[in-house]
Length: 66
Image 1: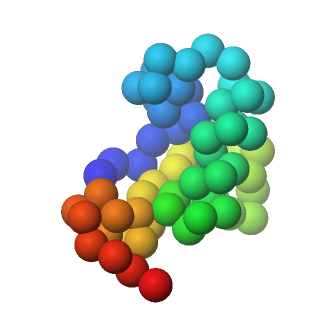
Image 2: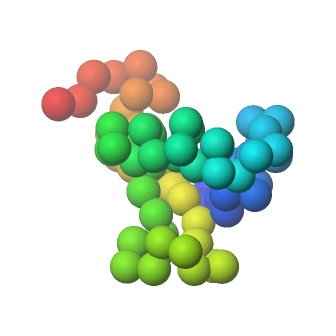
């Protein structure tokens, strides 16, 4: 899976409101350890992208991970 910006993720999900998307989709996925930031020390960077973690890939593949 490729790294994607929040705009790309929103387009894929058909969402328009960045704040709601960040709060209702991005934050819960990050808290669950399913996605991560590419630049974690600069969360507001214009170059920020998100990628699926190993745990997220396992979930997508139908495998359980602790």
